[in-house]
Amino acid sequence: MTARLEQLVAGRWSPGRADALRSLNPARPASVVAEGGGAAPADVDAAVEAAAAAARGWARTPMHQRGAVLLAAADLVDRNAEAWGLELAAEEGKTRAEGVGEVRRAAQILRYYGNEGDRQAGEIFASPRAGEQILVTRKPIGVIAVITPFNFPIAIPAWKIAPALVYGNTVVWKPASTVPLLAMRLAQALTAAGLPPGVLNLVIGDAECGTAIVGHDGIGAVTFTGSTGVGRRIGAGAAARGVPVQAEMGGKNAALVLDDADLDLALEQVMLGAFRSTGQKCTATSRLIVTDGIAERFLSALADRVHTLAVGDPTDDATEMGPVISGTARQAISAGIAAAVAQGATVLAGGRPYAEGPLAEGYFVAPTVVELASTAADIWRYELFGPVLAVTRAADAEQAFGLANDSEFGLSAAVFTQDLTRALEAVEHLDVGVLHVNSESAGADPHVPFGGAKKSGLGPKEQGAAAREFFTHTTTVYLRGGRPGA
Ligand code: UN1
Image 1 (tube, rainbow, N blue to C red):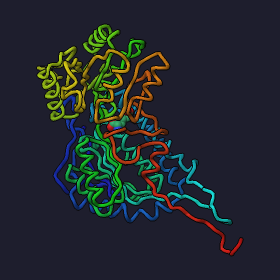
Image 2 (image 1 turned 180 degrees about the vertical axis):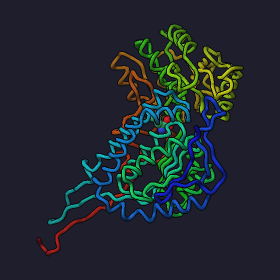
Image 3 (image 1 turned 120 degrees about the vertical axis):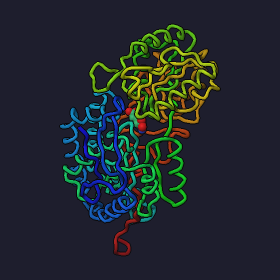
Image 4 (image 1 turned 135 degrees about the vertical axis):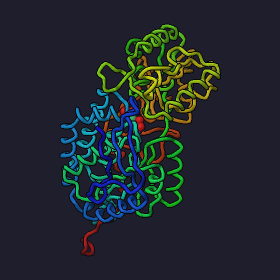
């Protein structure tokens, strides 16, 4: 059954005034998941106006009360986890188990920020002057533009919208147009939880609609997760207008399997890092560096495991990996694999398109492992955002660290070793925003900073206390009593 795609502006749900948008099931593209009018420029204007009109009242609402709305929404999201997780699998293509897990994760994020009122709200410093204290208080920015990607259709929106709201901002949110149903689910939960009209506005539209939002005069800050190209364009445009930006962009994340690793553990974790969510995570493992002592053994076990990975309809419980998001994505990833082979890579597993049957009809890409002839290959540098792992060998740990750092990106990495000294060297040498020791390169908890080093991101990090940096500004108050000498 096709869901009705609607916009939420000023507390009212209605179809947008632009051409119809539809989201498809990437495993069976003939089946339409949601359909309805996309957002037109007039819808964007109305959404920004509504958010601006709601800003003052929401900013004055006590933080505990704002948090209570998030906590109530978290309960609703949790209660619907099974149903919405299944919808997520059908609309985005990750497996049902991952879909349900993601919906629960969204609830966990809402809960974390829902409790923000119980935490420290600012700081007090001593003053060099008698009778004075210096307070640093936090205030909301105003209207935040939230632009979210397809790959975590409910968790990433939650981790941007929840802090934006709890710190007193209002929001105009544009999700990826491939996943409108899950966006509507989150907005429905927040509305049903008691969010006042206009505090959250959902506009679902094309890239032009996104450009209209981030370039709108009424926007006070932009938070974005998505491709490097789009993130940099948003950053440049916003900087020219003096608008702060938080952009979470590319990764080319390495897993390093060193000679002393527990190979069974490393194999299981590399599989998860590379192929969960069909490799469509900015934190996915897309490069694998193995040291010579274990290279043969590890790569042959990896190829065997990849060959048996169950690829299919993500709503089927036996499936371990679903499709990629679209035909365009399938084509770009397949072209990336072909280019790697043309540049001398050896295919250890996968590598070929599905020629017939349901896997050829859906947007499926075979889980693929290629061993590179040289790290000059494009696949070593450019993110494919799909189930493709590029492998190279290193003589020792030191060379492995150097190879891992050989990237303009520095989002996450995973290192597998049982040697504490090596693990500490990895912490020191690897230039990344998130480092996993003996676990896969993806995964992030809501109470700690998330974001990349080098060119993976712009602006303050996300999550935990880091989110407060972005979603508030400070007022430094030199506070003295009114009576002279007192
Ligand atoms: C995770 O590693 O679980 O777009 C989260 C992404 C990241 C989130 C990754 N911003 O994939």
